[in-house]
View (cartoon, rainbow, N blue to C red):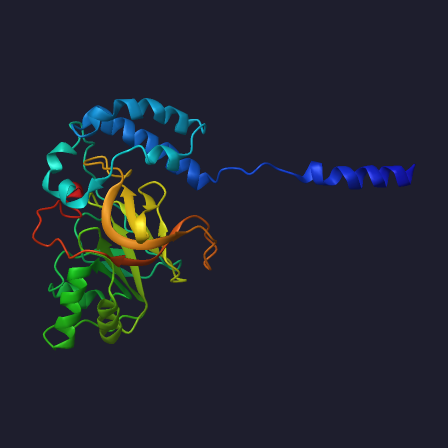
Length: 299
């Protein structure tokens, strides 16, 4: 009897242990956010009102009967210059009330940080200073600095030439990049390391100040924020992005002008989920194009 029980248990064990693959919580959050964002865009923007047929099909994505990647290919791409120059077509006629954002440092120990940008709330650990030339920056004795790329470049060059001075940083620099500014370059990394002598972390923001992707302490690519963005890898590594966390001027399948590869393997930091590797600018900077400042909607 004992022998029969052992054989039965052994044969049934693979069946008992088997579990059908489950969708990750990040994927569910992305699908839910994407669905809500697109339906609002169809209702409240001139550009997407013509996509009501696709909105009906999106119901299948919402309940898991259609892959989001399959549905996305039916949606027309939007060129970045078209989005920037014809922004009124994408603006929501019922935007939510603007509010300031909380800065999130990528490191677990949360160092004292001077945030040199508008639109962020201040706290005990994070102090907001809008002008990098403000003498208060030197008096704060911050362990870390977070700022847009242009601000960091100006600060670093001012320190290097002797026109500016701040106490040496002891922890890190967080660089705010974006779709128009482009990602960190090798020249930026060289300059920031030469001047600040601390690790550099990149955070990639959308047009309404939403965090699209961020670099952790392991420095193995940018973790995609599932509540703010959906990235697709197009031809020759070209990246398309859907800004599902922008309620003011939503856009889907935006041709970003960036290249990179998307990976889903677990990062050395322990986080799973998609990451962007080798993020680079494919086209020239769009400095002369009128765009919404990163924090304009949160001022």
